[in-house]
Amino acid sequence: MKLLLDESLPRQLAAEFPASCQVFTVPQMGWASFKNGVLLRLATEANFDAFITPDRNLERQQNLSDLKIRIVVVMAVRNRLPELIPLVASIVQAIQTMTAGEVAHVGA
Image (cartoon, rainbow, N blue to C red; front, top):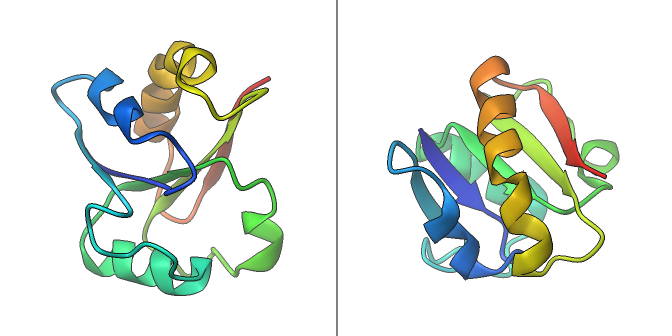
């Protein structure tokens, strides 16, 4: 799976995903500071399977039904590594059960 981590998540989180996942960060891709609509379009064009974000307003701000990418909204108390690492397995499991254009919420 090819995954994209939002720039508001710690980049070190990428190393916590299983080896079967190719995980990139928004800054690695050179897409830092792009608005969500542009970012999601670029991620879709780059054949990412999923976008992982803590942005709980994303689905209200964007029309996601036309996108060919899965969106996982991480619902952690804080966007810090100790709170996010326990959610990685649930994030991967959610992505595996989703279809393109779907949104899943993972965490508390």
